[in-house]
Length: 302
Image 1: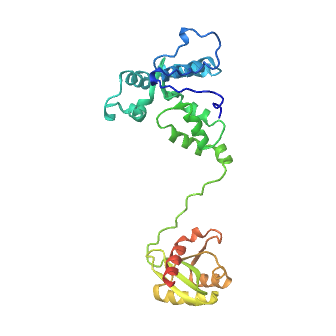
Image 2: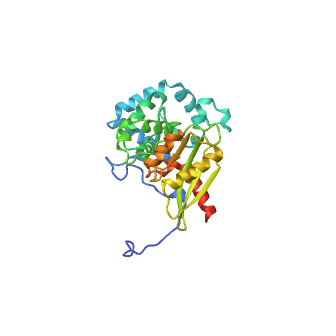
């Protein structure tokens, strides 16, 4: 629509004859001269401009430290630069061990006056990586934003994993992150004998209540139909029958439902010498062993 007032005549021109605006042509500071013409390699020219802006900007002190660290790093100065200038070998195993981490980005590496660039990112020498990590995490923006910030400015092999460790161990990042991840579950001691430790739970199916009793060692399940109402007396009656068949367990795990949280059930466990472990009613995963048995038994009943 912007071109509608004009009579446009399109003509073909080969790609090498196209004219591209260089990085500073939109805001010139003086009358252009022959030195302002774009070089043969536009990508290298843009990288040089980026480095020059760093030198002349407020980060000049940090840039001086970068040059000093790069000059004193033997892997950085004597090996990586040599392979960038002379070319990488045809196989990764032909590289020295410290340089093999650069293999996947070898086609994006270039140099500018002793500084290595990966695309438009500065490859940081080993001695400055710890301080670079601290600077990247200074705003405590979380893992995703910190990584995004790093991918725009700096690079070194293994940077992502180091950022993961830094952010996860940072107290400020953990305090201000939007949600806390779940803690890893603590597993109970694995039983050494069948029916040494059991789980129990109730479920409803087609208007009837069912009781499931499952061994944590073998996975053997027992099921009993309780009718339309499940009381502690009914649950205990079936427990006594199962105990006479398979033996008295040392531990019973339940979800703490009304039948298992009653005073009568507590007296029963104390009299038989059973340790009763209750999970939170709002966190059924803690009684996941019984939940899995309920799912299988309910499927069979249906």
